[in-house]
Length: 337
Image (tube, rainbow, N blue to C red; front, side, top):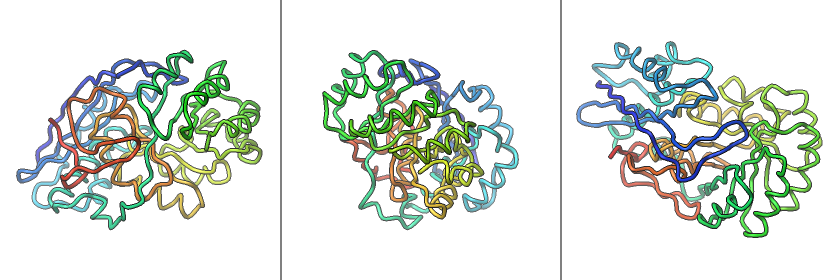
């Protein structure tokens, strides 16, 4: 098996601001695994908030070159188990890129998309939202008008959060979700929830700091809107912790280590009665095409990352007014241009 690493700087269409950072360019690492003329692709983005740099991701991937299969391809879950012995850490972004590249290669060697290999029915897939990053109210309205969508995820964490949602509501009848990215207190969340509900918000994502479990218990019991965990649910071991504190979880492939653990997290969440969402980073179509394979298993999805960047490096799934369409290629359906 041959390994190649590709690095790119993806320009964002607008400065992307959330409660704890802003960026105009997204550095991303594409891992390519090749086997008998076929190539699989996986992605991991540089994310300073989690201490994930391009240099450390490349070093991590290069450290496992001698462990790559040579004679036969093991099942992807076995491949992940082998790679995770070296690469599973607090923020396993590099492991995700390898895992997704391997699953993509697996699908291509079997000439089937992954959702077909997993025997999933794609006829009732959820639509994706489109994210409006923090900005002035005028610019947030302009971003929304620029990209008409039936469903928006609104980033909050300012001094004017209710006013922002009220202003956006005046411009559209679309469904809203809000994401405070840990910026609120329990008191703010409980106060905001009924007001946001009146404004057509369907849930609140990660209102409190990730380790504020006492506060989350109170919010879980008193909020009039469902609460979805993001920063509180990173790895597989976090899923069970969220039961009784959140109504659902948002799984990020890069944060948990790829498709392999994501499949297990979804299964575990279902046994605990939790709603399941999969989210993205600001990433290319390679990363978003992997998320698309999971759509039949999800209640909600946030996979607009490839719409937020100027992606000239890849192709795969397409998104039209929230509806995700698959490419004709097997695996994840993605390819590097």
